[in-house]
Image 1 (cartoon, rainbow over the protein chains, first blue to last red):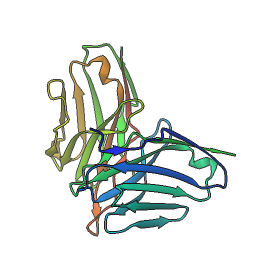
Image 2 (image 1 turned 90 degrees about the vertical axis):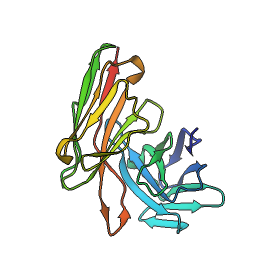
Image 3 (image 1 turned 45 degrees about the vertical axis):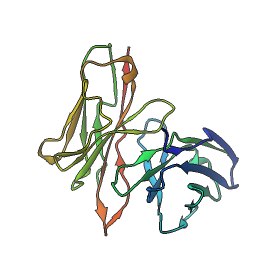
Image 4 (image 1 turned 120 degrees about the vertical axis):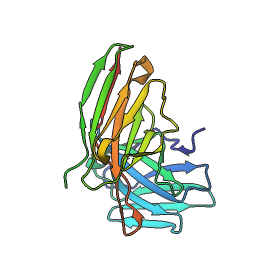
Length: 111
Length: 116
C-alpha cells in the first residue's frame, strides 16, 4: 500500500518557467510533509517542509502548497533553473518523525 | 557542520555473501535511520534508532538484516546472507529537533550495493 504517491515519474520544463511537482497521500493522520531533492550519486537533501496547520510555505524560489481536504501537496519552483534538475521526493509523517517517501519525480530543466 | 558519513560508497558481492555498511551521523544527532532505496522507488525505512535504542524496526527483514548503534553514535547495518533483491542504495540519515520543530533528516551519500 503506497501511502505517498508521486504519479509523474518525470517532468521537463523550460528554464525560467514554473515547475510544479505533485504528491498525493492517503493517510489522514499525516501532519508533517517534506520535499527532498536528490542529485545522482548523492543522498537526498532537505528542501522545504510544511506542517498540516498551514496551507502554504515559501522559501525563495520554492513554495509548497498543502490541500488537506484533497490530501494533496505540490512544490512550485519559480523560476526554474538548470541546476534544479534532479529527482524530487515528497515525504510524510504522522508525528513519529518516521517519514514515508514517495517514488520521486525526475525534473529536467531545459536551458 | 560535518555531514552524515557513510562507507563504503560502492560494494559488489555475490549472493549468499555477507556485507556491512557503516554510518557516522552528525554530531549531537540523537536519531539515526537506515533507509533502503531500490532503483525507481522512494527510500524505505529499515530501522530507526533513538540514541542506542531501537525505535522502529518493523520493516527490517530480521532473518538476514541486523543493525546496531553502540554508544549511541555511529551505526552498522549488516546483511547476511545477501540476496539479489537486496541490490539497492542504503542511505543513513540523522536528525535533531530544534525549537520543537522537525527540520527533517540529513542524509549521507549512501552505499550502492550490487548483489550478483
